[in-house]
Image (cartoon, rainbow, N blue to C red; front, side):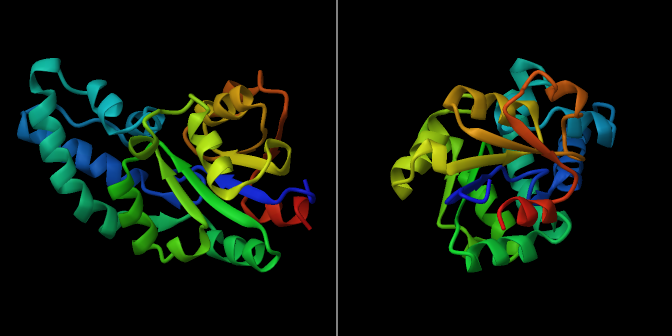
Length: 213
């Protein structure tokens, strides 16, 4: 892993924790339709495939457009109020940058909300590129988002690694034939990603520094 030139990170559950912001925006929206609130854990388990697919799991089709509109308007403020960095994320990103590693984000979140999170957490300065599903026209686990980053930064697959907290991240790396790092404590359990063999497992972001030293 110490030969890797490019470290591509998922956003939610990997370098940022915006689960509370998502949960509060979801339940605010459900309240507008007089629907029962959803538990934090249920909301957390179902993130990762972008706002629309997330909301489709909680609202009937005939209310989707109105629900999305309400959710998005609430979510900007919710992200500013409730987003936080994963433990020592800025420290790890800073050290990797000082080691001349290229850093990128590959997220299914809309670019607008990704920018809000990175600005709120003072993280945008660390990344050489931020790639989001709505920008590149494909959603993970389609590997195109990783190919997009590789092409923009002119780095080969074998010189790159994708770090994420979900099965969808491991599947994306597998389809791209890219090495992966799974960080525990996010949306997916370790049991749920056991089938992905070509990965390393870490419990904290700081372990990346040992792998890349």
